[in-house]
Each structure stands twice: as structure tokens, then as C-alpha cells.
Image (tube, rainbow, N blue to C red; front, side):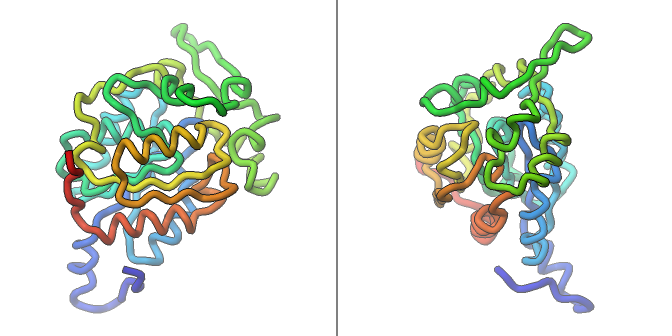
Length: 259
């Protein structure tokens, strides 16, 4: 699993083609570069990656976009979601035979009809609501950002201040509508595709109790709880995240979850 890609050999391409492509879906208040550390580790292990630019406009629209990304790959995909991205991958992979495994990184694991708002308030502990700043758009809708003055404490308390300042400046706003839109898939993807879960116990956006409940709900094949990690686990501890993804990749086309 950890061998580097060989160069100038006849069977390199065919060997690589047997491996799934990892498609990474960021959540609210993040962007594609939040996966950079994870991608570097996966690339060194011969794994091709695509960090999708999640639009963060509506759950249905975001999931449709990710389905298009998966379709364009043309090979089996291990689909990875962070935070709100957990809802997106649960919708995008529902009934999608191109997805061989799901990995939830500090992410929601929703049932049909649940919203990000529902799940974030199911257990006490989230301080996100007090950190948000709303913006009214020209069409009358509302998008949300985390105030830069509290971004590090709220989102990424375990990364250096300079890195946190860059993350605050490049954060992608999410619409209020996306966070309150229910999962439409009658059978969320995690009910038929094997799942892996990695999360931190100091996540201030999503309570750790919610992460534990989601992992149990999905009957995750691997559950890794990272002590002291913030919500931005892929940035602060990319090794822990990459190890779980590599385990999912090495399992090949994952078996269906027992009913």
C-alpha cells in the first residue's frame, strides 16, 4: 500500500489504474486547499487525488456537482467529506456504483431528511452559531462566514496563527439554505457503502458526541478519534486523516454494510 509509484516501467500505468481515485469534498468555511497536506501524503503513496470545489450553495446542487466530478473520473472513487461535506457525499454517492468507500472527516453522517443544522444541535457543545456573520445577497438569500477575529479559536485552534489568518481570509461562505436543506436521498450512501470515520475530540463546530453517533450510525469499519484536534483536522493533522483514507483505499471495492 505504501510503495512509491515506479517510473519508466511497463506495468506502472496498469498498476496505478487498479487503485481508486480519492475525491475530497471540503465543507463550509473551508476550501479545496485545506486538503493539501493530505493530498501530499496520498500522492507519495501512489494515490491520485481530486479536491473538488464544493459550491456551498445548496445541498442538492452541491451533491449534483460532486456526482459530476465522480462521473468524470471514470474509475472507482473513494469519496471523502469534511464537515458539511459529509451530507454532500452521503447524497452524491447514494446509488452511485462508482464509489467504493466513504470517509467522513469531522463530518456529519446524516439520515434521510436531516440537515446540517439538525445534526449540529443534536448534542450540546457547538459554539459555531455565535461565531457566524450573515451576509444578505442580492437575491435576498443569506450566506454565512466565520468572523475573522474568532476564526482560529472556532475553526482551527491547533494550527499556527499565520496559517489560521490565511484560512480565515480564504474561507468559502456557505448559504443558510444549504445548512437547513434536508438530505433528500431515501437511502443515504453510508447505508450501502462501507464507511471510515476520523474525527477530533476538540471540534468546536460539531460536538464530538455527534461524531461518535455518526460513526455508530454508519457502522464504520474504522473509527479513529484524534485527541486535541480542531475542526480543521485535515490541516492540523493530515497524517491521521491520510492514514484512514489509505486504509479505505487498500480495502478496494468495499463490501456493503450489513443491514
